[in-house]
Picture: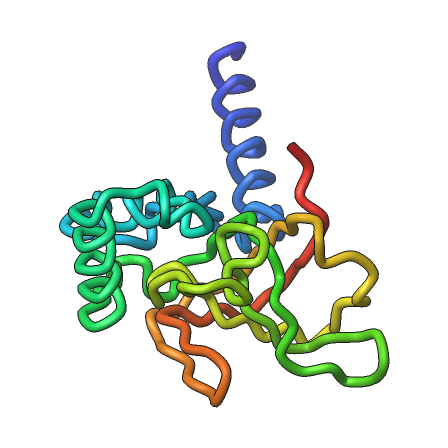
Length: 180
């Protein structure tokens, strides 16, 4: 009798779990680091670019400057993307570079970049370090000096305009201030 009761309770519990719409629709959200967007063959070049202080070129030797320029040209001319990330639901922190304002203070399209000022200063990051974001809900342009966390479906699909290029696109479901 106890065995029948336990068996019935197990069935009811399993049925309740399976019928829970939250669990049925749950997507696995992968938290990305910016280096996750770079294939292993280019990671050292991306790290070298991030660690180069372009404001103190006079303190760098000619050999280091030449090596840095060669790495940057390779990243810009032959960017590689991580295709296994295509159509994954991800979240990634970064900084916003506005592209299209719907009105005075709401943006619907922007670039997400790994560090503040990335697309303003020379040289820009390689395209595998820039994500083009569409956010239909719109984001109030209150403070773009702060990092944001963006969640949505990542596409290995480039974006090109007169002012920028991106290797990835993302249809954002959520854009919020990043909390450390």
